[in-house]
Structures are given as C-alpha cells and as structure tokens.
Image 1 (cartoon, rainbow, N blue to C red):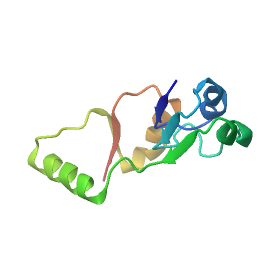
Image 2 (cartoon, helix red, strand yellow):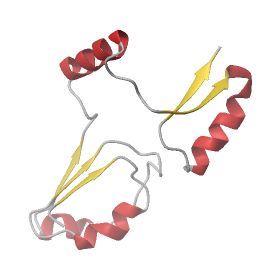
Image 3 (tube, rainbow, N blue to C red):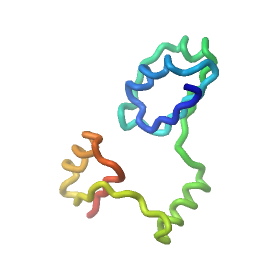
Length: 107
C-alpha cells in the first residue's frame, strides 16, 4: 500500500504497517479501536514511512461544515438516539462497533 487513511487506530497499525511500500504515508485521524499501539520503529525509518496525525479538518473547514449542518444542507447519518439517562446503553453500542453513523445523546 502507498497510503492509508485510518480513523480507528488500535492494533491494526502494528499488523498493517509491514504492508506499506517504501515511502508510504499513514494518516491517523481517530483512535476508536485503541489509542495505544506498539510497533517496531525501525519499520518507520528504514522504509522512509510517514506517520501523520490529523484532526481531519482545519478550523475553517470545520466552520464550513458546521454552517452546512445548521442550514440542513448536510445531514449526518444517525445510527441511534439515546437519552442521557441511557448513556451506558449508548456506550455499549459504541463499544460493539456494529453501528453505521453517529450515536446521539439527548437530554
């Protein structure tokens, strides 16, 4: 692989890193599968790999996205809605990782 866009993190980094071609890039923009990883640093420098962290947007991009959401032009996919009193059930659904879309907590 020449490039990876990763929003999950976790143990896949250690497993997939050896499949990157020399000079490849790996962009990490999330850690829902785990924020702490282990990998052999020699793979990084001996193969000239780039490991890049990204919040996925600039402040200007975020402002534009928020504006689109406010006008209704952009509608995120909602997987489930929970009341705040049901937060433990929401967290369990999130932990299972079988949802597609956002999990919303309402007051």
